Length: 90
Ligand SMILES: Cc1cc2nc3c(=O)[nH]c(=O)nc-3n(C[C@H](O)[C@H](O)[C@H](O)COP(=O)(O)O)c2cc1C
Image (cartoon, rainbow, N blue to C red; front, side, top):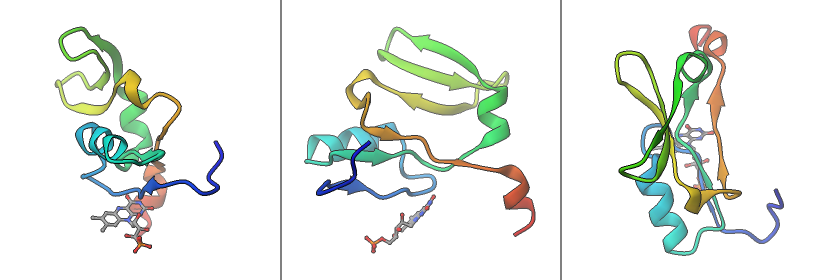
């Protein structure tokens, strides 16, 4: 990914979800960062094709949505993953 001369939505925990990212792309962002996602959560999640929204969802067994992406952001989204070990040592 080339970051030179690009308008980029900064990584923002909680708010950098799909609706924010799609809005940022609509209003001129070239690259968008996902919300912060904890590594073990994405590892435990199941990948589901959401035919209603046209999204790919990563969902835990209790239905918690971990990450949702849409083809519109393909090649433009940076997946921000945090290591749980790092968090627990803060
Ligand atoms: C609400 C909020 C959440 C943020 N979450 C993250 C984050 O998850 N990861 C990260 O690396 N930076 C995070 N940041 C820092 C921003 O990505 C950015 O570096 C910072 O706001 C400085 O931006 P500026 O140089 O445009 O002022 C967050 C900032 C805000 C305001």
